[in-house]
Length: 206
Ligand code: 5GP
Image (tube, rainbow, N blue to C red; front, top):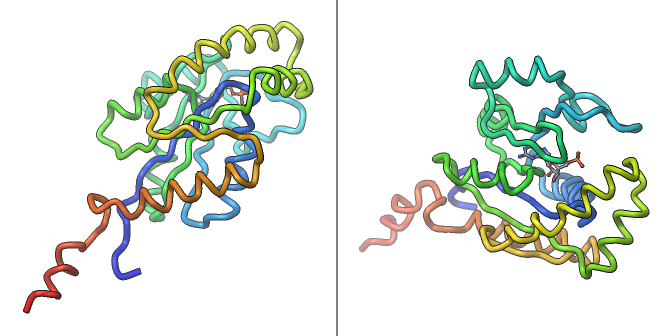
């Protein structure tokens, strides 16, 4: 490409069970210009999760300290635990000229939109309510109580879809990932993001 695109933030949000984690993993595998932001959380580590790879697991005290020191780009309470993105994470990836992918909820998305960052919001939906309930049940990563809490919150999360720029249905993982890659590629071509565009266009002057 003749000109490069200004880096931006890509936010993926969805109700639990829409497949965001698998989608995110595929996206960073397929597009080397995307980096995944690893969030901080106060929720307990699930089996199979690794500190700093899946989340940066913090105590409440450590999380409070991060807030006090103004280290968070955004943070929110989700399912009774706190989750947040460190400013340092974003700066680090932008310095490496990567677009940054965030798997965060609607509250975090709203905070990012209110900042002066360039943010593209993509809302992922499961293909049907029945499928969503099935996925939540078969995940079995959480306690029954937590499952119920998540199902109750699904309605609230879905109600925020109009705030996003795109809505993608995850019926087929491969198709869904390709659709998101196409969105990202198109966003990179937005003329407001193209660096040196004017300089390039001026070359065509006779
Ligand atoms: P889980 O505990 O299942 O990994 O994530 C629960 C919810 O928290 C998901 O909807 C996820 O997108 C959201 N989440 C994860 N990290 C962050 C974050 O840094 N900020 C915000 N606002 N939400 C997050």
